[in-house]
Amino acid sequence: MSHPEPPPAGGIIHDIGYRGYAGPRLGRGYLLQSLYLQGFRSTFGLGRTARTKVLPILLLIATVLPAVIIVAVEVYTKQDAQLLSYNRYAMFLIPVIGIFVAAQAPQLISRDLRFRTVSLYFSRPLTRADYVLAKFGALASALFLLLSAPILVLAVGGVLAKFPLWQQTKNFLAAEVGALVFALILAGVSGVLAAATTRRGMGVAVIITVLSVSYTAAVAVQGIAQSYNNVTLAGYLGLFSPFTLADGVQIALVHAPTSTPAAPPGAGGKAIFVLVAVLLVAACYGFLLRRYQRLNAS
Amino acid sequence: MSSASVSVRGMAVITTSGLTKRFSTVTALDQLTMEIGTGVTGLIGSNGAGKSTLIRVLLGLLPATLGSAQVLGLDSASDGVRIRQQVGYMPEHDCLPPDVSATEFVVHMARMSGLPKTQARERTADILRHTGLYEERYRPIGGYSTGMRQRVKLAQALVHDPKLVLLDEPTNGLDPVGRDDMLALVRRIGHDFGISVLVTSHLLGELERISDHVVIIDAGRLLLRPGTRPGRGPRIGAGPRTATAPPHRRGLPRRHRRHRRHRRHRRPGWRS
Image (cartoon, rainbow over all chains, first blue to last red; front, side):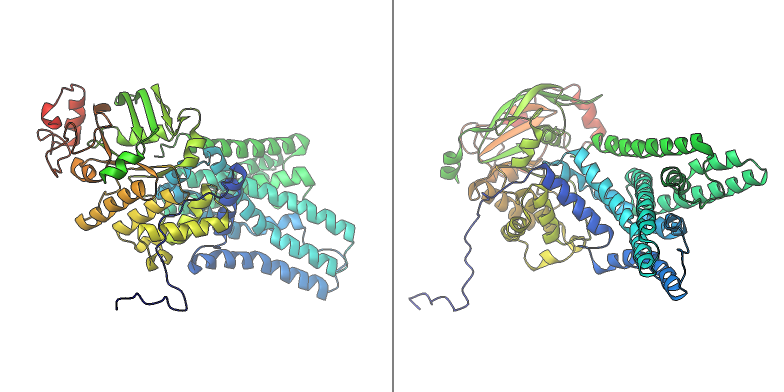
């Protein structure tokens, strides 16, 4: 054994020691994009364990399946107009959207705070404002995808059922604007709640409570106001829950048919709904920025 | 060790002048002026001495009340982003999500330092091997021992090949064997990897063994300047001592120590 044996055919592993890195170091846009994509994918369980994929996929099926059934009915019964306004679809999905956002917002936002991973992000070139932008963008995009997937199914079905093409395109785009409004408002509200509660379970509970209680209460008092024939008051009461607010905004912006007991009253009422929605999203985003700027992340 | 440490001593990696950080009631850093060169520098101080505050100021995460700090020639107040591109940081506290594997996590952190996807994967595989994580790196971090977690925390600080790495109490919570492994690794980073290291601990004895230079701070003040190598010049500590604070301070509850800080006095016993 005086001579070392020749290396086997498959090659041997040498410890070549530490190697430095001389390759590219990409800038702000890349960091933002990487964090955004990672967050967006994680809301559907991609890049995470199999267990985390179950809920988002079930919810996605729950949103798309009714649309498929509606399309099947439209085609099979040879309807000459769509059975359901695309803009109203989101309001039928309230429980599904509520569960999705309550599960994913804390996963996306509370987790980094809870496990103090934020300190690793902030000790890197990524700025805090970019962190907020990436996380908010990921949550809003995920919601938008969830809301617009069934609308796309409905619109494609409408084309198959030979509804007027121009009308279909217009309805589809109007519904997409509505989906964007829903996504931004819900991402803002749930993002703030998730950032305020660092425990994930707590975040889930708080978001689902706030969304469902505010919606039920707003619709209930709208109904009461209406039974006293106060339609104006009933309309304005829609400002007090994220879902009815978003519905009011899409009524104002794209003349969507109302899905609540009362629509925003008149042109002034519509303007107020849009204004309140813009202020709400801006306030939520501002809160998130402030929350992370002041965070003592070491 | 001695020959290597002398040859790597060159330009200043960290410079502070009159660095002061005051919080509402506490002065965490008090007129700190020092220069730290390449190689491994141990930063020693008891809990609350200002070690973590100093690191946060150096990273540009916390503005100094007075004075200034330069890291790799960049000003920490205005050039934070550029500093953070070239510096790695391992926090003292736990900072790992439990439901992802070490590989996934370190790859993500590499990308957050600007490495493209493929390079991030290669560097992650390399660095996890160097820090001593093998098969377990594909399992979720939630199931790791403290020693393995510390290795992941160290790996994410090194994955982008920084010029300087700030390690905040890397031996925290480790058993004696894990402690020795971690210290050997820290020494390799400074000597074999060619990355400058600032490593903190409250135990003088353990850092004495691996550091080229030692800085001691107490209540935000410099007690011993860098440039003093253990075993030469003024000797720090008598042999492998593990006392963190002077004997009369050891074992005092924290609130008493805080109180004490306001009436600081020299403690000659600690120096000799």
